[in-house]
Length: 394
Picture (tube, rainbow, N blue to C red):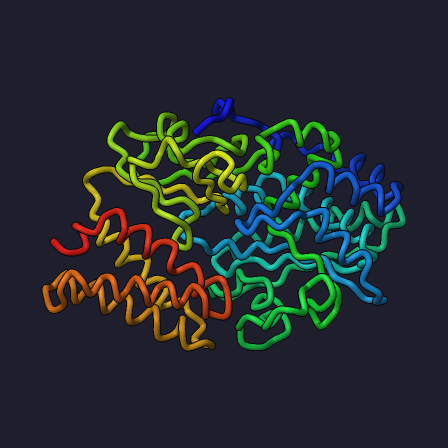
């Protein structure tokens, strides 16, 4: 992989937020189009993993014709191995609140919601205090914008934006068909901007320091920095802000224990990369420009030689089987059959060639499942079976 990237730690997200009043008051005086252009020129992409351009998302909602619009912060941090958003909300909540209010100014929304993961109930008291202080200042500067917390109930599927809307509307948390997209038909059928916690924190950085400061970090097509939740077989577990574009080899050199045989990039719904692929795999949105490029919502789980990849896959499939909402057949049935299948092969009830059938099933799920949950099962399944086939059998 040819790149001049050198792994560097950055400190924007958790840097002091005492100037949030100044950032808010300054930016709500700016024209909406100017703020949108700033986001677009920064090339900030959504930090939830999908990587949709944030500026474009705000632009589409701003252009939607409706008197009622909403801003939603997706704090349903349910991806296994990810634990960064709760730290942002605990340590620098005003950055997120400020970004939501600026977004409301841009698109013409007067209401915002934080959809908080059910397991993060302990964050609610302090977060409510921050919201009260924030809204008091909004009154002082004549900004009509309210923020409320909506508590989730622990369903992984509600991390998907349209399932989140359904949950907020008092319905069963199941994904909607797309189109229409949230920018025109989101919460309560109204134009909605929905960004995750980290994405909003980055918009604060951009509106404070300017687009160029953010754009100068990272590499082409993967601008800026990213928070990574590092866990597993590592002497340095924790949360780190790094520039995007690093090779996985650089990452393992920094965080590995000297015996890293694989890294799960992006949590259970991401890809498992074996040691032989570390040097050719980059973390970001570069596509094939620098070899293999993998986006991630932030979860980076390291496994050394003591770990059974069969047990890892078995654990992921148990998770997906439990968390599937059951709405579509490919995911509801597929997750169960994949789990039964690898167990049958491991016990010797099915021969090794049965893994090929399971691979085809995973591919079918990728193309036919209704939402990202069922579609992403193939990521971890295929990458583990392809690279550690022998551990599935013996």
